[in-house]
Length: 478
Image 1 (tube, rainbow, N blue to C red):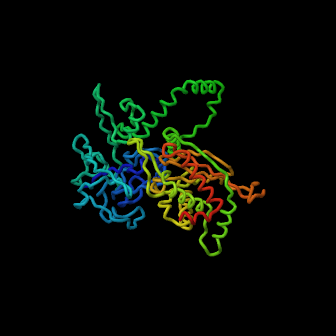
Image 2 (image 1 turned 45 degrees about the vertical axis):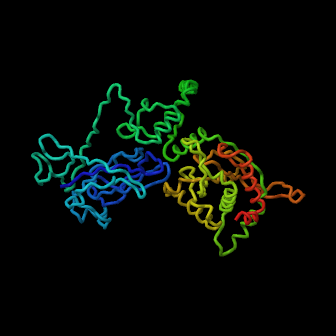
Image 3 (image 1 turned 180 degrees about the horizontal axis):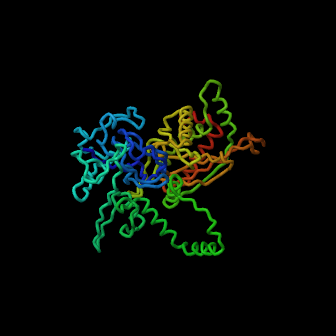
């Protein structure tokens, strides 16, 4: 007998709580194989094809393209065992699609040890089995599948193409809450901690997750709304006046969702939690450019200017390790990290992303250049994985590509510092006691004032500037 399995949006890792459906890869009534991608979603980090762990017939899809769905929400239901074994293991084109499962053998009747709705490297605990809903009169389960004895109920019309019709959606059980109940639908300790640190009462929130589950985004949204309460009256007055003149009707509204929404929340959190400060200095980059030209000889791997600056950063962090750190607000401790995972800002058509070069301190300039080029190309195609966009410990921001000299960037939370590099331009400069035209760059350094004082930050920036002016100093730092 066929068994209907519900496949939900899996935990995509790294604190992601929702995703937007970009494109459905299967249709209702289509035969799918085990681990065949069924939908393409966009998270705040990247585009991901989600594979289904069940083989069988797709009986229902949940959510239209462009709709944002939370983790744990149903994506598709699959009738396992509704087709012969040789078809369940094949893809939509009839080609072998992996190890298909049959609903008639022992393997199909056993519950998986964990939830099937996982991506590589992520998993959840086993979910309770869903029992099929029985129609009144014992006509069989309300899934649209034939009954176990193969005899259709009286008055039933068999499907014309032999493919079972989609099941009638089963309503979620509603459990009435007691009038004075203080139970809060929160399962994440992180959500409780954020609420506690910001003096937020979780019992006053309505969760946007499944069955009213309170998500981290709900808590952060409530915090933002509370902070904006003081300015709400004045904003409402401006909007009301604009409405009277018809200007509000012509205003364009851009949803803060997906990658842009995630970046907005991270920027806000950084400004809210990190007491940052910035110092800057001008440096003569003429010798650095000459060193790069000398390295890029014909036949040798190309070394980018950003890779040279990345190598300068790793050398500076080796001398000032207190800046390769984060702050644990729960334990009130500064956590100094042993490895340098260097993030660098990259502008793409989908917005600003920060790919991370793992173990940058252990790479040569050529290796840094090759990895940065690979990550940049992958970022522009939207194929970066969550692992390639997270766990950074320090960020290098080259805003000089936009033709600007300086900036005071926002620290990439929860890191402790960021080095900014402006454009390199020909400017008058005193060189060896004489006025000359040199290639000058402005370097800015934004740091978390909790992890160090100005003397440490100034020492770091001065070392970086010295290496830019005299690249040979890097040999001493090796």
